[in-house]
Amino acid sequence: MTTTAKSPEDMLKAAKTIIADSGKFANITTVRKETSLGEEAIQPVSRIVNAVGPVEDAEHPFFFYFATKPVTRKVRELKECPFSTITWTELCKGPSTPTGQLNALGIARPVPSGPAGDVLRERHWQPFWANHYSKGPLDSPDYMLFEFVPYQLEFSSYDKDIAIGGPFSDTWEPFILRRLPAAASCSSGGSSSSENVEALLSLIVQSPWVKANSFES
Image (cartoon, rainbow, N blue to C red; front, side):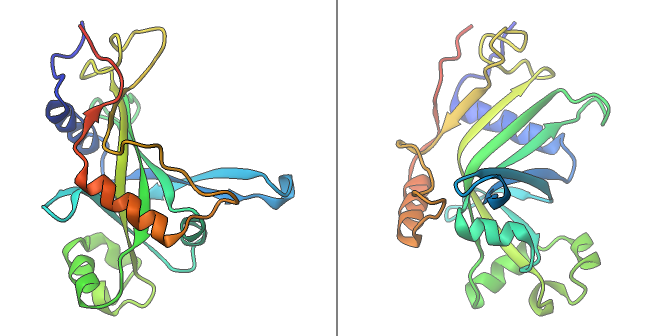
């Protein structure tokens, strides 16, 4: 048995269901230079975030938002390389029985200061964030909102029978949707120019989701 949801639109709906079944939290993976392992060593690092979304208005198609403090390591790492991954674990049968996951590969950037940024900081504010940012979305100096724009979604689900060749395929290959024609990566040295990132973001937002691997019954 393989899923009958084959169009990008149907698979986006399936991805949203996996997000809904994951609870409030996900993991974000960034990269950092780990000098203790050698001058050129790059170490992926993951931590929990509350990723709000997906938002689907005309200006922010399938965007996510998460809050953090400016002094955290992930802020420093995302400034060095904004390319990151957010992972949701599907828990529709309970926390002890994960049935699938969704990896969103994308670009994370701080919401800008000013009136336009304030609108986003208020719009995506979550009540329980007040435990960490007691003065609310506009007056908490340590409240920093990030915007995450995915260019690729990789997901599989035993519950929803989503995987290339079916969830019991020996390859364990996930279903992949992509909306960026060329591969995105950090420039040499682990940094990315703001011009390059903005150009990629513009391309991502304008591109439709397409299937990046075959998915046949």
